Image (cartoon, rainbow over all chains, first blue to last red; front, top):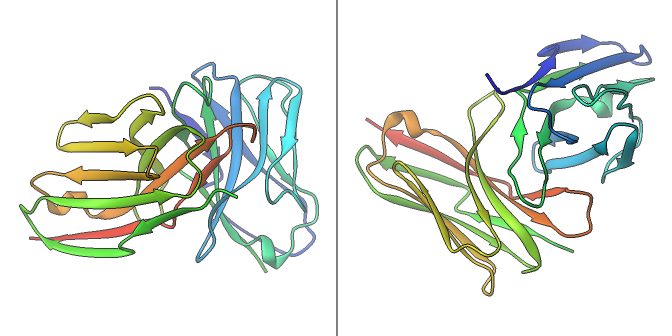
Length: 113
Length: 113
């Protein structure tokens, strides 16, 4: 089944403890992206990657890192999480954003205390 | 700056009713528009993708239209069912923004048996 897989689905952590949210797609998509969803603010892009080793900032990149060493994987790294990063995170991929739609993962609900 | 607005924010209808969800955007320079469905605590499921050169797309009981010149899209749901209850999000893809989607805040739909 074609899908975007995120792990973990739920995570509660403490301020300052580094964490990684993994994202993997099995559709050979070149484009991958991370969004966060917050009440009243909607979905906002954090980082995106056009291809392997090519990443760039979205609208809200502060406090996050990403890497794209392989086409299928695009992990989101929080080096020192803070409570304002408590959110619902989504990974998405597309064969080509201009011509094809996006497939989203099931989401990761992160709580930082 | 592109802004996407969805009206109404919430809608409750009896089962069997036909309904229309509205999405408007401020800048017509989009390359596509996508409608998603989000169930509580879950990911986004793509429903329909309309390229900027298209006027409408259909899938089963769903029909989405796009009028770029007026900055509007509608999602028509025929013969609504309780299983259609979810939040519906529209998102536009904009040029020169790294494949970013700009999302509306969504319409929360409740279909009563």
